[in-house]
Image 1: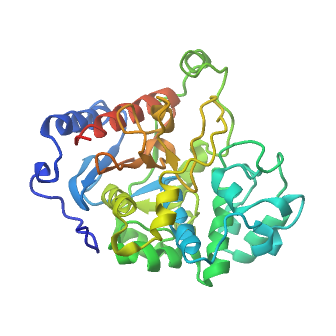
Image 2: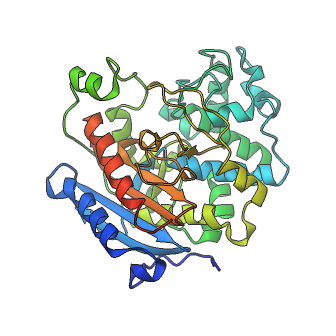
Length: 389
């Protein structure tokens, strides 16, 4: 039986959780490679099974138990709050956002549904939300009214790095009557005992988390390298730039709790969050809803590489098309694996077939996109075979 709050102390012997020694050694060796080679300042990993931590290790300049900015891995936590409202019958994903947030009902956005927002098919992928607006709800709502559509909702998939989750955060607040950051703490991370998984940490509390500052490393890939690896002339421009990522070194940015990218966590807390998604202790979520979001692919529209997005309501599913590595989960997870990675190479997923959940975090913002992609695939692939299916 999986009990909560979770125990954040690793077991003495990973073998007691069915984690095999040789694959684990290969994983740890691969994780250390960039640290030993001076390519990254630090990293942290955690591997969990059966509701317990098999491994929680830090390498490089990171202190044991220190925290990282997890970027878009935050999205799975915010989705967890939305799933609760769905399961309680308080939110219908077919509903129009504008019916719940009247300020959103402008410039053709009246037709956008909650499901489209969660699937990144809503049509406003780069809608702006400037840092001064992050901490002021009235300014955020004003910005909603100014947003315009890039294309017809539901007609195309394009990753919404931050915009969609500002909407989801507001939906949580409208329905629950509670600030979305407090809702996630009170309903999810608090009961699970995951004190190291935080969204919106006041400036005065940040020192206690020992947050690893972000630093850039490496150099940009050449156009020839990009063409050779990805088959396209250049990667699409997005708001996810090195400067935008480094902005999360600013205490006020961390305090804002950007719902699409601003979470802080240890690798252990995020790996254990995925154990909760595997086991649903105490029926935290409606079993039917959790089964749907962790297994039902609702969007297979292609991404910019032509790869089916394989999106559920809030997560990415590995799928059985041999392209799980292009979705950030490596080559070895089962088709049923699910997760959501983050910028700068953060990895977070769970695999129902092995019972493993895995998290890798770093504070190195790698400029060489190909090196980062290869690191993610190599580490995730080794993690996926640490326990038998």
